[in-house]
Image (tube, rainbow, N blue to C red; front, top):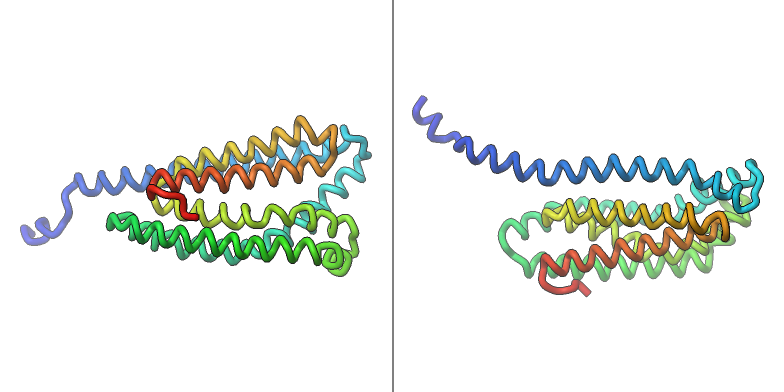
Length: 232
């Protein structure tokens, strides 16, 4: 019995581990809850603001459906690759950070940034050149092709943000990621409520682009504060 007790870690170790887990779990949970809530608000009010712009109900719902059901899935499709990369990066970065190996964190971050920018640049060029024919071929919709072309510029920042947020989670910066994600969505909502009734769906697309640029830049500077240098 005494030998068993000696093998068990002290209660303080359990408390320390629990504290660290909660520090990660609570911001992640709040991030998911608040993001879902804000996205629901966005989804409810976009058709309404399109009607304020001058569309009738059927046209407003049709335009929003083409954007979210046809164009955005194409833009997000390559993000499956960066999503998989994010899952692989999380334990690698966490291990390097726990060992105090900042150089490994920096090297991983640099490779990630350049890989995502390369993938994003290729996708932007591809969607710009092929967006309209792909929209016509897949969906028989000229509008879907126009949206794909307009959304193509989001790709580098979207893919970069996905992987950088995973790196920051691995570095224990879940709170910073939470703040950036929420403020990014608030930027999009500001475009929905203030500009979409005046300029139409293009204002929402512009808001998405600005929000993605904001997120990617903020992630880079938070990473700089941890690693000591920008990974570019």
